[in-house]
Structure formats: C-alpha cells, structure tokens
Amino acid sequence: MAKIELERACLTFRVRKHDRITFKEFLVRQMYRKSINPVMKVRALQDITLQIKDGERIGVLGHNGAGKSTLLKLLAGIYPVSRGRRYVEGRISSLFDIALGFESDATGYDNIYFRGYLQGETPASIRNKLPAIAEFSELGDFLNMPVRYYSAGMMVRLAFSIATAIEPEILLIDEVFAAGDMAFQQKARQRMREMINQAQLLVFVSHDMESLASLCQKGLWLDHGRVRRFGPIDEVIQAYQASVLDSQPQAA
Image (cartoon, rainbow, N blue to C red):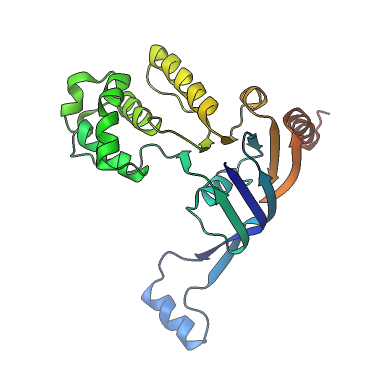
C-alpha cells in the first residue's frame, strides 16, 4: 500500500548573500558591526497540504521556478521539510538527475554498480540485473571502457538503462528525457510506460500537457511554491492554460 501525505509542509532555504567577500569588505563590515555575510531566506514551498493514495497518478504543472522539481525532491526525502509534516508509505524510486553517481574513469559495468547502489540496490540485486541493463543499453563492448570516452548519447543510454531497471512502488518522474537515437527513444518510451503501469503511485512533473493528460488522473498546479489548484487533470490543465493566456500582453 503506497501513500504520500503532506500537511502544511514548508521548505525554506538559507542562502548566503555572497559566495565570498574580500578582506577589505570584511574589515569594513567589522568596523560598522554589520553582518559579514548575511543569510537570505528563500521560501521554496509554502503550506503544501496534499494526500496521494495508492493507485493515483498525479501530474504536477506550473511555470519555471514554481517549485515543481523542489516538490519532487521533498517527496523523495532529498530535502527535509522546514515546517509541517511529510509522511510516505512505500519504497520510492525517482527518475531525475539520472547521471548522478557516474565516475568518468570507471567502466560502464562499474558505473552500473555505482549508480545501482545509489538507487538502493544491493550487490546481489544489481548483479542479477546486470545482463538486462547491458542488453537494454545496446552498448556492447563499450561497457568495458571508461565512460569518459562515451559520447553524450551513449552516456544517456547507459544512465537511462540503469535508472529504469527498478521495481517502483512510488515513482517520481521529473520531465520526459530523450535517450539516444530515434530507435532507442522508442524503446525508452515503452520502458517508461511499463514502469508507470507497474508503479502503485506516480507523481509526474512535465511541461507537456498532452503527456500529463494521458498519464495522470489528477493535476497539481504550483505557483510560486504554493498550490494554486488540485483536482481532475483536465480541469487543472484548462485553468493553468487560461491563466497563462491571461498573463500574456495583448497585441495593440
């Protein structure tokens, strides 16, 4: 049984105003008793209350900087809530930043293990999945080479093959990413569909309204870190698109 609950969840980042200051600035600020490097608070998410039950597919939409990817990372446990409550029941599998954990001097096979451990695999479980990952990537003998010699397309193939070799209960996806050439992209789309069908619960972030409408039952519209609307996906998409059109300047 998979479940996600957020109760008035807030996420605030504390950011230093300057990465570094000069020695002169340090002396001046000390002289006038000013803060040497003041901290700014960035309220990324504010008062998010949300319940997602087993079997539900939720699409998250909003403008760039609305907090969509940040919300996924909070749900995944990468960011702890600053205030409020987060409760998750079920094993989380996330598909964002799929190249995380790669070592450029290690071979493709070694990187399958490195990335697999980050996804919660054990040495035994990733060993069992190794042949299937290698076959899906179609990289053949290149898997014996250090990945620093890979092209960008080969890196994406390997990263996608590893990242999707999971058995999800709760699946968090940030955007649909291209993977290699056209033939491989068709395989990738089929793999994504299989994962989504297998998952007990899905939260999917995308700017592609057609994908959201076809994959999701409900929509969550985020606006400047707050929930603007949550409900049936078609209604949320319609409201969001109307808002975008209203905000555009009218031609003279």
